[in-house]
Length: 278
Image (tube, rainbow, N blue to C red; front, side, top):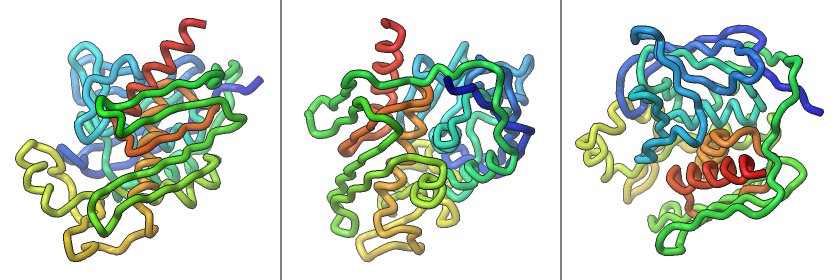
């Protein structure tokens, strides 16, 4: 029987939000067994809380948004990914804005922040989400999908499909352990096509984006150096790990083709429904 975990001590990080462009102070605090991952708005009266579960997903436009009673948090997937990789059951995420800091556009800063805080075991059993059948979500055109099937561990296989000649089809397959995640997955950053940036900003998105926290490409090449030749698909794996943490800590094999936040979170909801029906 596995025990639940939390942080051994609090840890803090200050930066700007990728989409909001606003400075935000984040503090990760230890939480009691059974708390789960809870986001707290420290700048609002009463410090309202939003539980990070698939039930509370309200938007997947360029990021994953959770909301309860009119209070929302968005672009939570990179932090949730690091929490999932390190198998943190309980944590209070305290923010003075709606969006966690983007750091360098990857999840490594969050992973290392949690590592530095340390992990404490709690005197309560973990309710791991064990995939014991096939769960699958397809898009309307049957061109993209994400599925989960039984596996003794946590594995993610992802195929990304991008029509741009610079990227094309990329594939990666990892058995997700803390060691593998830190080295091969966590450093992969958010990617943007230069021609889309103006449109995104007109929509109020990407206001905090820069070449310091986003990999940008155009028709000639990359505007900043890559951490990996296939960094796009590795960042897609960061995202799917984070989105599926909204169902819980997963034991299973996730296979995805050109999936994004909408399909990922739909799968998290389907898994959560299946677990509750047992």
